Length: 462
Image 1 (spheres, helix red, strand yellow):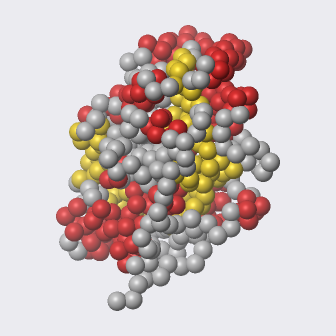
Image 2: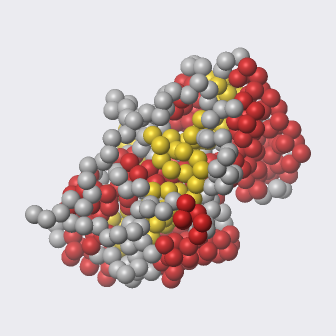
């Protein structure tokens, strides 16, 4: 049997609604042997030339934390840039736990904006991603947490999400509140039967087709549907499950070979972390890190309602971090330690009392943490760092002035160590990981300090 061949040029182009998910998508492709780059703003002609030969091109965004009005203004240029890349599949990358609501991070509104630009008479929707513990069965989404799998509306973290608490596990019902476009479903029975007939039936029901995925065999079947039934222009929506599915199918057909070997980037003598996450997984990582050479430095995020007070608080945290480095410790600046930290309620109260919009406060927090990290890296000459938290990673990475990221070393799927690229090539090198709040094993921060790399004995992402 003759192996299939992939077309020349870029295979997948994606826009991610947050930075951590955007980086996770790049990671799937890069570690599968598909050279990829993630730009932190719309790439210029010069940017494309600098990273010529890439087969996956992404643009990291912050749409997940933004209202529909922001999307109407900022998403069209990003989608036009994706269209200009002219990849067979253009992907609007969303959270694998479907973080969104009609008023913030609306996936439905993003689809409404993207569809006329990126095309296709149908749009595959793959939210599940088994390698990171996300599963979909008969339209309902499930997620792994602490060794157990929960339906999303009963998930210990997602049901209590501070911005978009999950009340509905059916991906179609959840997203139907955000768009007037109709949904169909290719369930697992249809996927393992006559998948083309199941797709035709689903397309008779709607334009956006959710596809069940529970394991690697489902990924390959979903990838076949996406790839073989694609049109001249094809918008796909989903988590990095889209890329996992395509990679599995390409590998099954022989179009893509075995993944290249990956290794650790080597131990760093020093490292710095900033975290704006309130997820319990990040809290466990902070606890492990502080028991293994890191020094936790709390910042009072409630002060972010006032720019002057927040700048002073960031300055205090930087001074504390530099002092910790002087004592031989790795600084870890954090706004909270888990969802029950009193600091979260304090921020909510400060926002309510001040009248400053929560969106502005959240952006100040992220940019402040990024600014703090930049000062620490420059003054202490540190070349490895982590930003934890989806929204924090976006604002923080922009504050650092990063232009693009390429994958360097794997850890838990979805939280790789990356190489940062700046506009000024003379700038000191930086290795950085952007970690979603729910991602990573308890030893994640120490693992990154060791340089990442394969770790088959470690548990799957939470």
